[in-house]
Image (cartoon, rainbow, N blue to C red):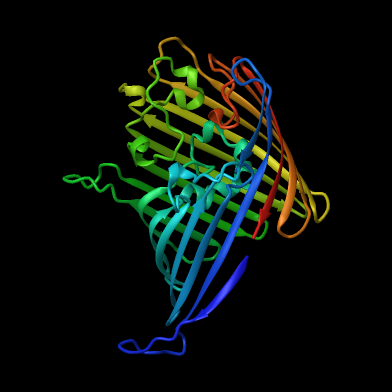
Length: 375
């Protein structure tokens, strides 16, 4: 990242102090690649798809020393599609992040604006998709562990580190007249680091997520729920709850990750019943050389659709492979593969159709070659 240091000189009605120094960093990622899907509605597809290993973006972040161990911080981050140049996140200018706040090494950080929730901040590092890309997400990113959406109007507090522990709490104001709880979101997380061990636990509750998170994966109510992959069972839910735990353990050049999430959608598809997703994931990576890394993982997703009387219990078994090679400190190339097997009345649908579309059968295979450049 290129850093531009700016010394702020203030005159007139403002006092000039020795510690009034600011810095602004311009940074970004451009990621693109070719994806092959063997079955996307009765046919194979080859397509250029941007933002898989990491979303393409550019941003500005900065700070100003206020003295006494306090500083002002801000971050503005734009997401875009490198295929077409279009804005991401539903066309928002700074759809990835947009916040300002106060940071203190002693007391923690308070930020206001459009932000990541505790799932991304604490649990995502324990998942394979959090380390290697969107196609490895739990079914349809149903638990937001791949940051399918961000939280608007959010107030977030992140604590300092105490004996390896750190915690966070976020509350999003719904902004609905006459109600303090309509369209609100609460998210909390705790993490623990001790040498090679990292552990995390998170909780999130959101009212009317399909309304709040316009950039998310939610779809309109479906007459035939299974026709639209994992989110086809959900439709326009009245509320969402996520509980997740996970951890990683590093052994020399290797790292092993294990995580579990339980996601519950209430009043799904316009009913009074719920849809519940249980995701279990085991994955690992090994750094073969300083430049080359191999990774593999397995995710099992079980769905309980309580408004279906057919006895169907959708299940998704997904196998993930990744090979990454760093050409330099800022540029890498990679190959990835995903195989998904669905059962219980479901059709295979890797990341809810993001690569190309839902399979016409219970199997789907994906392969991708890509490049990522950071600045």
